Length: 269
Image (tube, rainbow, N blue to C red; front, side):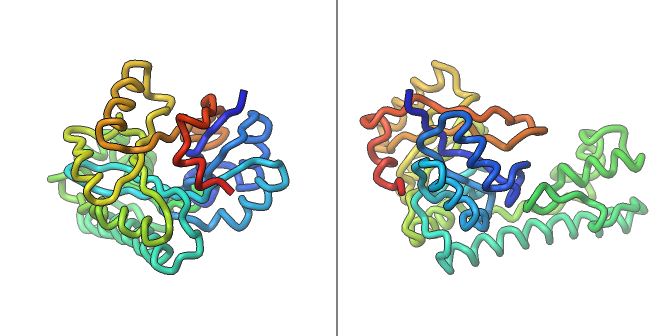
């Protein structure tokens, strides 16, 4: 069986494995078609590419970027040029905006007498601290009984330490991916709460849908296959692997069919 897994994270974002370790894990799992899709980062590719070549694994360059289109979502970019200046500037701006958001919330907390500093918040590999890490530290320091209570009392929308999310519009993210030579794919569509407006996303340049994903049961796969066919979107598959010690620690893949994955196959190196 030939396996495909086009959704994976390394220590350059919130994964626990370095790119070379990730390539070794993919080889052990028998993956033949692979992509590294770090959050808001492409810095892992100079290490990833030779490790994949050494093991004879075909790959396409990738990245995963948060965006908003009525609802928060993740957009995968495949076939991008990792060194593209415009894409790299956008990714750097996104990472800095996330840092600024958490620092702003920490400032609000400080004025309320909640003694938490940005410097004590843990980074997840290459990912800046988020509200999740901030809430966890507040819990650990006794300012809340749980991370959820930290949200309820301080960090949720409408609460005194909330700071607006810096999400870019989906159309801007899609445009940047296409400008970098890539194709934009909506990741794990089940996670888009509320309204999923594929028509608007398609009009903005979305070309694919991540149909095969661990959280998609058979009924969901059928639904997303129908949606992909209706909107003329190509199909991708990924396990969203993050590495040992995470909730997404299973490296595996889906059965590769040249007909099913014809469009994405054109991007493989």
